[in-house]
Amino acid sequence: MIIEAKNLTAAYQKKKVLHDLSFTLKKGEKLGIVGESGSGKSTLTRVLSGFHPTIKGELSIRERPVQATVKDRRWLCKLVQVVFQDPFSSLDPQQTVQQVLEEPLLNFFTLTKEERNQQLLEIVEEVNLEKDLLKQKSRTVSGGQAQRICIARALLARPDILICDEPVTSLDMMTQIKILNLLKKIVTEKQLSIVFVSHDISLVFELCDTVLVLKDGKKMDFFKAADWHRPERSSYTNKLIHSVHLK
Image (cartoon, rainbow, N blue to C red):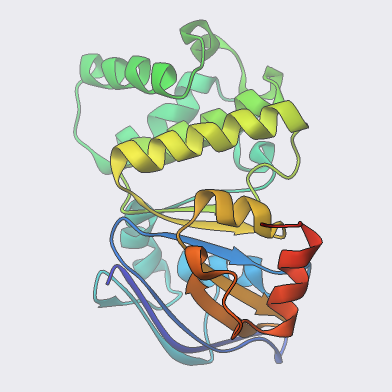
């Protein structure tokens, strides 16, 4: 298992926000985490990426125990990359796009300048960005371009796990479709394990093969996406499914 979580419990200021969550993720599997606002989705992504501690339970990434310490975040940072809802929140407005994309290459690999430049040209083509964009300041790009830049930066780290936390929520409909199609292509071609977080269960079913449903920090369901119609689904999960008229 690339991720194994057992009885994860987490809190903010002594108030529990995750309650005894257990689930697994295999290599190359696509896990969707779905739930309404306040269900614990974003907290869980912070736990998985080593940025929020647990008060109970066990978490292993590639069979290595994870604790929310600076030491753990160093090795987790390469294995687990996160793409956030607001791309500009993780971009330095003073940096050029090239400087943004070079960060993982400089931090995780020993490459010549020529090798770095070659990888930059390859990744901008892969995520459908113009190479001239490399010279621009990151603050000058559009929302869709900014999200592509964040995806490109994550891929340059060559992670085992890509966490996408509501990655299209802040984008217009046409840009959402383009970014989702890009993520589908990337996941298929690179055989990455992906954790896709969304309040929209239809997006989760479109992209993922396994679904974890959260409500108030508790696991309501954990099932294969193809089995969404099974009668043993919880009433809460059925409510989410019926709200998007799945057939």
